[in-house]
Image 1 (cartoon, one colour):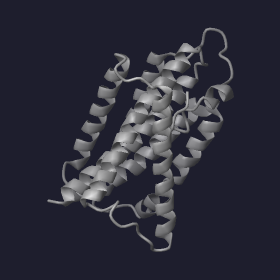
Image 2 (tube, one colour):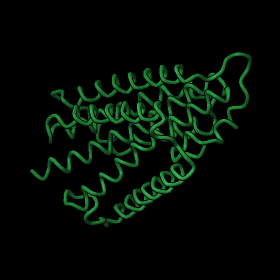
Image 3 (cartoon, helix red, strand yellow):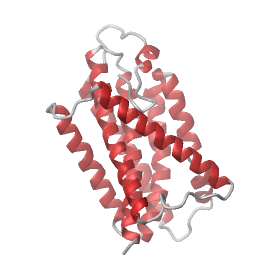
Length: 247
């Protein structure tokens, strides 16, 4: 049951407690709630994108870019430790994250026209492809698979954390964040790991539904899947920007 996504871990079911009556988690219910959260991200992102493209860009945008990640992070932590809050806080996470994604996407698209639409289509394509492979049993989340993806994702997370801390002191890691072959190769690796996280998320949701988890865990599973999709989208966006900048 181990997954690299901290929101979709086996301990989540322990924190959720037993289901009450016939109100249990289902796969269809989780997918429906995932669609709702994605719609909220799209609406919020479209709004902030429009603000960036307006004649007078709001002054708070620069603050949002620097500190806008704090509220989604706090919301995600609360949901992770108290799964019962997912029905109310996961929409908050989707809206706040969507606003930041809209700003980031607008900035990328201003530099590389059409890159956002391509990134969205690729993200949806990867999601559909892996869902089809998982549904047909071609790809399964075995113990070795889980352990490998968990280790790789933890390594990426630690690397990003170290890079962030070093950047505070004006130290940049050469190569990996550039548009050279090393940087592109690194981005391809990260995109692959982010995509394979979807398999672990599908497995988590399937096990939760099979185990009769409480109904509110549908929101929790949808939230966890959204976290992975946002990560995948951003990594694809970063990869495409590296490729486009070489032209």
